[in-house]
Image (tube, rainbow, N blue to C red; front, side):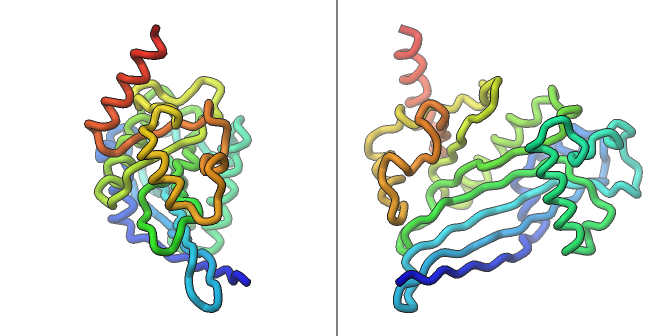
Length: 238
């Protein structure tokens, strides 16, 4: 019989900062009024007291202090008051965090990122992460920040030893083309096998939790990714 376990810890702000672009203060006109907060959820299953499966989920946010000097436009960018329900949800989730963490009392989120590993075998390394959610207020769009954030996340994950980042593209407009993502069906068979074999008790067809047409992947080996990207482009143009 399997027994679940889980725990949550705060990530050092300096570590969280590494997931975000270095020019973030400049992008939002905030000067030094930018800070970072993150939580790491870990857990999994044990059988007969021995761990057999594990997961890791990261909640990462870039913030500014509402009591300090900041651009006036940000006063109208409260995520809780967004016209998009999923951004509103992020705003409400952050409000719950404020009630639990006093250091967030006067803070407001600029960006929220959630990375999730899914459940993998205990003896496997974390080699991939699902770029599960990304949120900013719609009033702040058009600055190219989404692509920059994604590139920063990829760079940090590469340093952490991950090999793949994938996203379920549920947007109406599509993922930013500058990210040059590929469909999961364009992965080499060996790459797909590596990902599938790391999962715990999951059928191959369920490894990506959305239809293949909605799943996009970034291989964190740049040379390999470019090869696969142009392979995809050359065949889809014909």
